[in-house]
Length: 100
Image 1 (tube, rainbow, N blue to C red):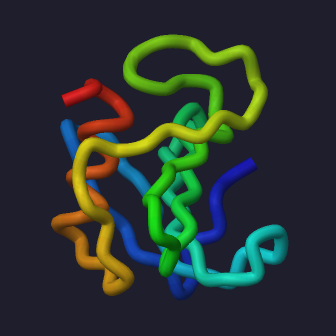
Image 2: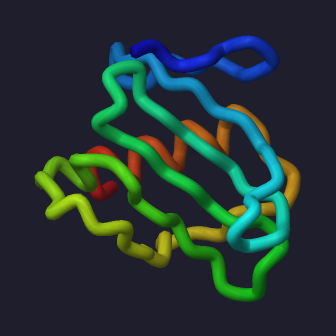
């Protein structure tokens, strides 16, 4: 099953394709940045407009390690602004895939 790309942004980081978009998160009742790898191994959600930024890993891999399938929150070592640009998306992807 492929990822819906209509109205969503594409970015290539490290030779891999990702789709990203900002949408209303029903659980948080606020906008959230969503990042999904083409193979769906990396699925990230980052609520926007919060005091302490957190990235929620919903995929099967995070920082080059397999996960147990349970959603987990990680605090990034950098600031995530409310206005999302491709540069910050790339920074989150590099951190979430390599830990750098």
